[in-house]
Length: 74
Image 1 (cartoon, rainbow, N blue to C red):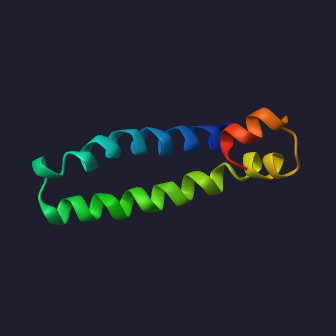
Image 2: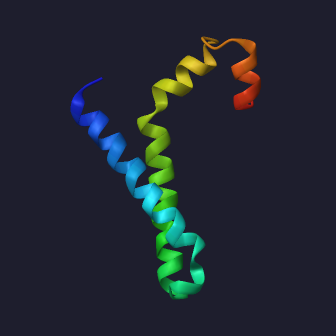
């Protein structure tokens, strides 16, 4: 995996970590800001899964033993 992709993954993860508490503190933000943050989190969630598509592929191929598969819900 190239370094720029790793940096991109880390940035997406970091922004999601920052957004989550802001979304949970709806009372501290206005309703409209809360809604826009939620849309941003949804986009980041989709981007996170696209960037980690290799993990899903290896998971589907059965590279994990039965216990982790059970733990992850597949």
